[in-house]
Image (cartoon, rainbow, N blue to C red):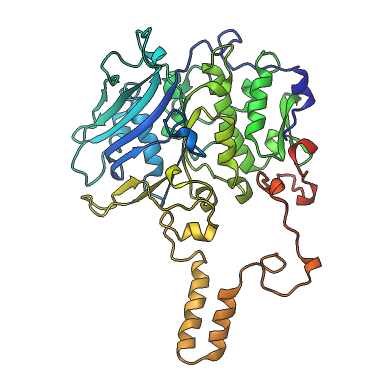
Length: 483
């Protein structure tokens, strides 16, 4: 069980966002939004895609283990990042009308025949209508979309109509945030608007996705917006703490203006954490800030509904943390809908078929290099990494390295020519199932000399990644509360 630090238990600290007073934080409600579907035509490399997304408000959500997780897998260049950005394009067409034409020219697919079109179905709360109805359902279905003309790169945003035609979405009331593969932390940033690479200003709604859509600006350091003066500090700090790996704790207090974390039993500032942990902390702490901006006083940060887009969720993560990071995100923030990309077989192997979306080559589309997005019936839940890698989701012939396959091929050819020693060597190499000294190794060793397997409770959430200080694994606490 994760224990709160003494500072948090005493409630001695609070938080405030840069440029936002404690009275105004949460005043502008973020709206309740989930994306139900996506329809793409000739969007960069994607020739066509029609995808239904999982979200917490689906009628079948109670029967799903992870009703808020959607993970995109596929080859590099297959369109995973593009699909995430296309969701933003469809939702924020009006905000993007003033963007540079040269940026829009990259969207229509080369070799395509139609204009670039991105449309999303959205599920939003009745309170987000211009005139909220007094009776009727609490949620409504609607659509948003954007077209970029192939001929002149002009952009047209489709009117966000409600399914029954009774109204339209107000702007900006919905909550959507996006994080690209470059999640560096740099200078402080305004909570109301964000500078674009050309030095202009984006409205808050678009500012929350610029890191994904445009690759910047860098994310705000935790120390720049978390302080000991706001009445919601304990809630924010506990949220950040709950999103971290089990052996890393957020202390809840600072020294010399730097917040401290207990990482495997040692108190260190953020900058002394491993690069992998800093990269993860960068976006989850920014997400906490964004939730603080839009959540009304009296409502839990975890109650806000919205969409979170993250490219390369497994970036710089040790395999142990990859095995449990999605369960932590989904369980800690069950009302948020996550759209993620990944190259990790460990992440894919922890999900059901309904959680996975494959980007693959589209042989039927005109032009070269076209891809498509679809769900497969193949279920890899609980499969080993080798089994996932050789499944349809990753489509490898085998999980061994190319150089090793070349060795096996040479041995196989020699064995066909009657070389008995080559045949035996081929058998020895393919039969090896583990490294020397590992419990799965086929080498002979005394049972007492084998490395013991850790209990499941100790390994599920562990993330044994070296800090910059170079601590040994022996210093790691068994559980977060033991530090």
